[in-house]
Length: 258
Image: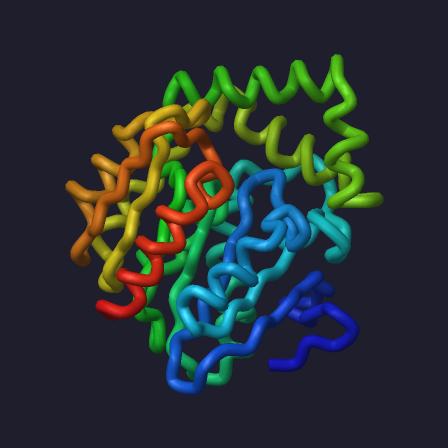
């Protein structure tokens, strides 16, 4: 893997990236961020994950996020499918055949599910899906409408700009406008679940503002591989922030069992 000056070159894009080395023989944990995420918005979770598991960790920002290459608006409503089919394979190919586990949060979890449920993936040992979406719920739309109101009436743009710089408008509007488009209500990726052959750890907070436990119910019911389910109390849409210790423990156990 070549990360030059903090960037990976993938599919004609320059993607902000960071690699944390780990023990030889351990799978690489590839972190896929949420719809408003980036390398910096994982904060110190990648370091904590590497220390807890002993695994190498790769974290990167998708195009249009963080310091990565810009993207154009409007985002296609297939943006998660496009990422899974056109970009993530190029990320994984740079692992040079090393075993790996995808650790996705929110949109990142959906991208991981589409990717692993599309074609057989050599070296993929497992999936950690945190606050995943596999179909659209009313609570999802309500949460995203609330985010739009915050964008319009608070300093949310300024706070996000610290992480996304010149990409801030694309990062927010590309995500928000897509989810609030009327045609997005029919978005559904449950058809990919039966084709997932790698074990899954599905994590969700009971207080998630963007989805209910019906999301991980569907994963547990339909996935083609064994599913370990973790539901966390006092936890919203970001389990890695709200219940860090429990999430680290669960991922450690999951990776060790793999």
